[in-house]
Length: 328
Image 1 (tube, rainbow, N blue to C red):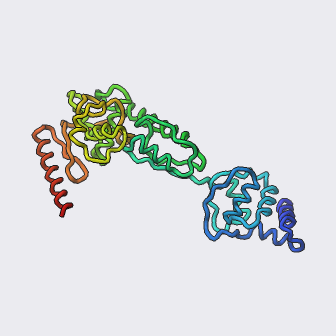
Image 2 (cartoon, rainbow, N blue to C red; image 1 turned 180 degrees about the vertical axis):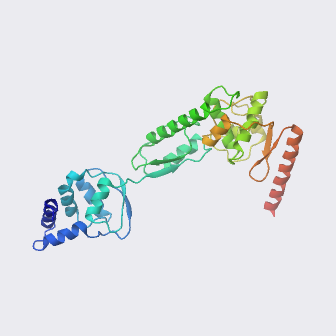
Image 3 (tube, helix red, strand yellow; image 1 turned 120 degrees about the horizontal axis):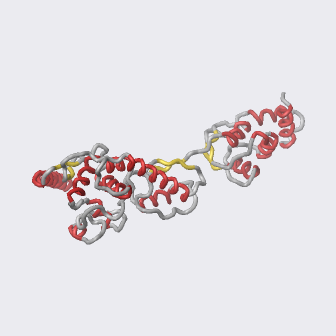
C-alpha cells in the first residue's frame, strides 16, 4: 500500500467515525461503487470543495460529503476540482467522481441554427437555449452563420454571437475569394444579400446555383429581381409573414420590395448558409431568367416569358387541384 493511499484511508476512517475496522471500510468508500443507479448529468457549482460536495450528495452522486472532502484534500496535488457540467457514470466510486471533476470531459451542449432564419428568429433560438448566460446582444441581419455550435453551461450569449459572427465573416470571405469572374456583384456584402435571397427561394441544394444564376442574369440585364421572399420580408417589417403575399404587398413602395426596385435590396433578408454563399458567388451559367414552383418542392426554369407563362399556368393548376382536394 502506498503512503498516500494509507493516509487517505486513515483520514477517511477518522472522518466517518468508523473506529476499529475503519481502514477496511475506508478503502471500500474510496473504490466501491457509489449510489448512482444510472448516469447523471449535472452542473457542478462554483463556491469551493464544500459546495461541490453538497451538490454531489444532493444529486445522489456520492453518499458521504465528509469522505469526499477528505479524499479531495489528500489528493489535491492531482489537480483542482472544476466547476462545470459533467456526466457521472452509474455506480461511480469516490475515486471515479474525483477523476471526472479533474480530468473528465465537460459536457458540450449544442445549438443548431438552420439556414434561412432571420435575425429575430435566431435571437429567439439564442434566448431559449438552455445553459447560456446573459442577454442576446443585437446583431445585423445576415451577420450570423447558420451551423451547429457547441457551447458549455455558463457560456454567454454574447460570446456565442461573436463566434457566429466570426464564422460568417470567414465563410463569406472564403466564398468571395473563390467567386466566379465578371459577377455583377461589387462587394462581399452584395454577395451576402444575394445569397440570403437564394436561401429563402429554395431549400433544395441542387437548385441553389441555378436560382442564383437566374438572379445574376437579371442583374446583368437591369431587370427587377421580383423575389417573393423579399416582398414577404418587407411586408413583415423584417419578421416572418404569417399569411400569403397580397397584391398590396407587391405594390408597396419599400426598399426591400424587389417588385418595385431594381437591383439588390439594401441588406440581407436572412442568414444564408455556406452552400447559398457558394451559389451566389459561383452561380450556374444558364440562359434562364424566370422560375416558378413546380409542385414537387423544386422549380421550373424558363428562358422566355412565353415559356415561363406556361410554367406558371401549370403551377396554378396544381394549386387549384390541391385546394379542391383539401376542400373535399
